[in-house]
Amino acid sequence: MTATTEPLAFVLHSRPYRETSLLIEAFGSAHGRLGLVAKGARRGRSPWTALLQPFTPLRLAFGGRSSLKTLTAVEAHAPPYRLTGIAWFCACYLNELLLKLFQPEDSHPVLLDNYHETLARLASSQDAPAREAALRYFETLLLQEMGYGLPLTHDVMGRALCLEARYHFDTAHGFRCTADGAYSGATLVALRERRLADRVQFAEAKTLLRQAIDFQLADQVLQSRKLFQQISTYQRVA
Image 1 (cartoon, rainbow, N blue to C red):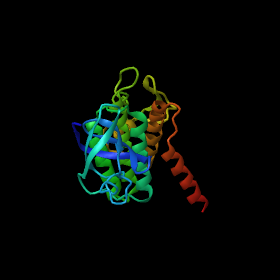
Image 2: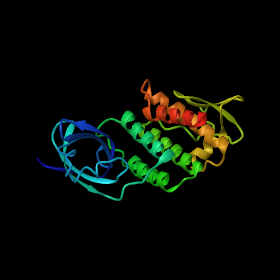
Image 3: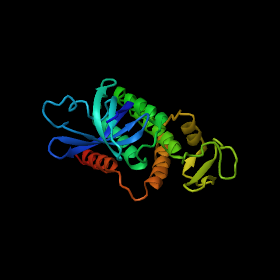
């Protein structure tokens, strides 16, 4: 079996398969989403056990003609990202977006690089605004890579977005200037220029991107979002 290589990839999800193997969903720079069988990966002495974990940059080799490939080699590309608490929930959310919104073997190397960068930011900062900014910029690029990028330069009439104006967002058409719009032009421009700066802008950007992403998800439910909401509710009660 001729091996195909993936120079940079991350495990998005895995589950047991048969007695000793794993079914892996990965996302790579060259091949996008990949379904892989890791034979024997659950054996106690398998060197793959510690490697095939989420948030670890990997090099992979695999083969096979079906949509489900057979993993033939794994090695670390770089050390794993150490994510705890809210940062871990955020990273799980990124993984679920990639799983639910992208088709197998649809390459998006720019998005994979940004995912790599976002994990690094989540792992290195305990600062809530920095964490939120990393998520919002990733979501913005994700929509762009899907072909549904937000029109953050102009409204539905073709006019440049105005910092002082307010806008309503229609997922099918774009931004319409209206006095009672949910989103300020200042927030939209800040999101475009990757310089979200204050609590109001972060809140508006989060609502906007949730609206756009939920439209793409259709009826799919994000388990990572539900779990985080449950944990947050428990923490407030406790």
